[in-house]
Image (cartoon, rainbow, N blue to C red; front, top):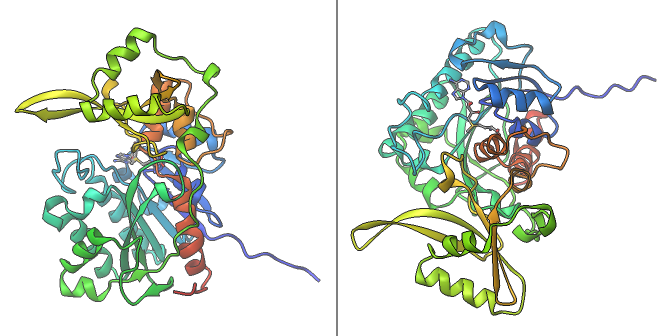
Length: 376
Ligand SMILES: C[S@@+](CC[C@H](N)C(=O)[O-])C[C@H]1O[C@@H](n2cnc3c(N)ncnc32)[C@H](O)[C@@H]1O
């Protein structure tokens, strides 16, 4: 008797970066990936065996895409829709790359090869950029192409010690995942409900409240993922003093209380510009809740995250390393980072957290692709 296993469904990874989406898509076989950036492409190739096309998504044609893909994943650039950015919207040049991706999906559709599942990952700012019109336009495009469409806001902090809320728009056609009759916490938060209620009638008719179970309580904290104290470089006492001097009185008080607690307490911290009494001031903002702040692309020293340790009345400080950032994205130690520390931090700051993609894949996408239904 011959026993044949069913081949894994094929997935395409657009805006692939270091390929973290592909690593999380358990059960899928990534047959094609695309990214325009040489450093990202090198990182992808160092960690994957598949085929990556390096270039602009606008230059791709259906002929470049192999096989009959079941799923297309697009982590399109978020700068223009980020709450932190200028919010020029999806019409803007960088975030506009989404439309290069969508044009390719339409070309595959014309050949009868459109993926039945499409996932768009972006910052949650996409829900409100352009007065909500960017989100509505993406959902409308999918609904008009015959997909059922829904969105989930998933924070990596449910799986990893990093605060990283991200938006996942999931569209399905010809297959279906489990749905609930209405919004369900924690993934259909108030922001998603508000954005959904603003959609036009036809798009709302195509809407699905995708059902996904919340994970078990996380028991990993920032301190658990840090390098050993003697394996990393620490700031001098003078540098530490200058850094800590940037903390507001409230944050300084927290730090002093931690140092006096008799325990070892670890904080993550960022420098941020705040307006106080009409003046812009640099502030060091610390968090002692066991989470790192959202990893960002370092565009200058101020966007690098610090690790601050308080113990026995003393305070030490240093920068978070790229390897620690990789752990905060759910990567294992064998993930190959670029040689340069700043390239590694950029790669991780742009990426999607692997366990979040895995949860989405195992709980919704893979069962849908295999024609199974998961209980709502
Ligand atoms: C938010 S990052 C996605 C990172 C990826 N999900 C990961 O986990 O590493 C967006 C990516 O889109 C790429 N990109 C930007 N514009 C592009 C374009 N026009 N064509 C192809 N890739 C583009 C960037 O180089 C960047 O790696």
